[in-house]
Length: 228
Ligand code: ATP
Image (cartoon, rainbow, N blue to C red; front, side, top):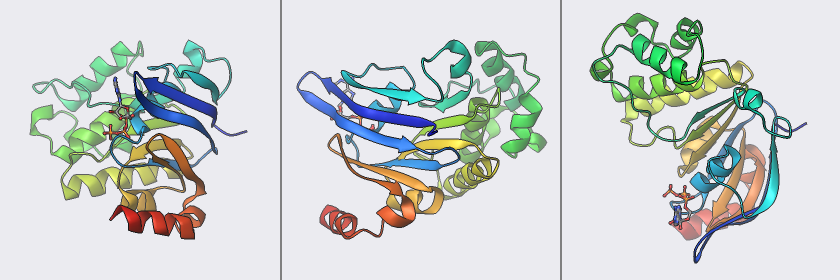
């Protein structure tokens, strides 16, 4: 059973056809990259699978059907920069995040450990590096131990050290068996981090499948040459 299966998903904003007939499957345990330039429809697609947006046509199944509140707890999301409190510690910010998710907070030490933030858990958020802030955001998404993590451009806006830290964390989470779906406009990020990829261009799916098969295809190589 795939973790996520999309069939013929389309979405239009007025005159803009943001997604046209998208179908692909995300296998369990994959680090699945949705790769495409700005405006190709990545955020719209993640919005649909997280129930933030409604597709005009098509269906999808994520984990099981139909979606229920309980199943949504099995999905962790990082779709936009969380509003952490600058004068609170990482630990306290996770307490706030846990209470918003109606969780007890007993999971906080575990997610701090995964994100490599235990030693600095009582430091104020404002003293954190960019990479630590983003690792905290991923830790917040991991509260409740979801099976699937959905991340929109998780390294966007980070410095090189932060980018390396976040990519390392994603690989580490994948090793624990999580399925991770992430949007990226960076080919080298997908090559470094992902096992599978779906390539979007102007709302259309160009190619999808295992990274080591898709990124060596002649039509993909031609495509990336034409982009330059
Ligand atoms: P980016 O990385 O720039 O966010 P993206 O690949 O995530 O790009 P989307 O944000 O999904 O792409 O946008 C797909 C298309 O839909 C773009 O042409 C965008 O301008 C348009 N679009 C997105 N959201 C809206 C909206 N709320 N209203 C109108 N048009 C929108």
